[in-house]
Image 1 (cartoon, rainbow, N blue to C red):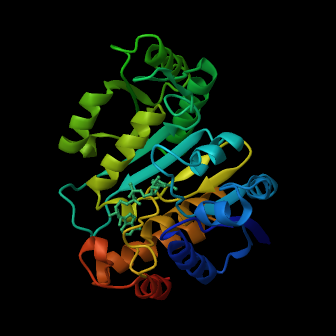
Image 2: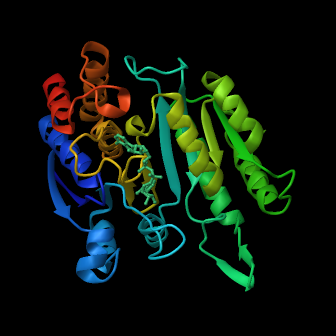
Length: 332
Ligand code: NAI
């Protein structure tokens, strides 16, 4: 059986890390036919749009994509392609497992948590305007429907993966209506999952506890903005943005991508760390039901970090992307 998967290389270091990931996947023996689609700055130049319709059509047809990072101009220019894709494909759940990797220096050990972030609304609804010159307003949209389905996703994930606790992260003490609705929706869903413990934590206290006792957390469910910020914080707990995978999942399709961005400062130099995208591809294999290949990819990454000194610059080494990838393929 062969899978047809949309490949979006993206901007900056995207083409380098997607190529590395393709090589590792080829070495697993899982037959994949890639459908290449451009989105981001290159697509904007070529087609006049950073996210041409055929990108969305390709993911809808194949129901699965592997994606490199795509840059978003700050405060001007085109709307985030990432947000566009998540909305157009209704990829409502962003899944980010964060786990220590032996051999990667970190201040913490025993970190094994999963962030489940609501991906379609909250403060990232793209609804902002100038009220009068000098006053801007951004709308934070929270619906019961979106809050309930992200809660369902988190609890289903916890049950399927033998996770014991789901912590709901919120700021309902201040945003009583919007975060209050989110919290209430999660509470209602939690009652149907008696075997999973539920805890509630205010987002600022959560940030503090995460950097003091990260090993105490299991699954965390939260809205879009908190999820965006705490995902990066959690990446920092286990060695940084270069090593944490991610997935954006909906009922119809899924897009797998790393947590990091396009890293313009090192783009084109051949020194990017492809670990995060390779681990995202392992999540993708798991999603496809290729559990054995998925486990082998993760173990190969772990073996390189545990048994060798091959490290890219972000982790203090001087290996190139190609050298690191070669080590992973050898470990496989
Ligand atoms: P970034 O993640 O691209 O870079 C932050 C720092 O981490 C940089 O010093 C970079 O060199 C380093 N870094 C990131 N990934 C690395 C890797 N794989 N190997 C080695 N070093 C790595 O974040 P930044 O600079 O805030 O964003 C750059 C662009 O990426 C922006 O336009 C932003 O909008 C976009 N972005 C896209 C995302 C996506 O497509 N999912 C996610 C986050 C940001």
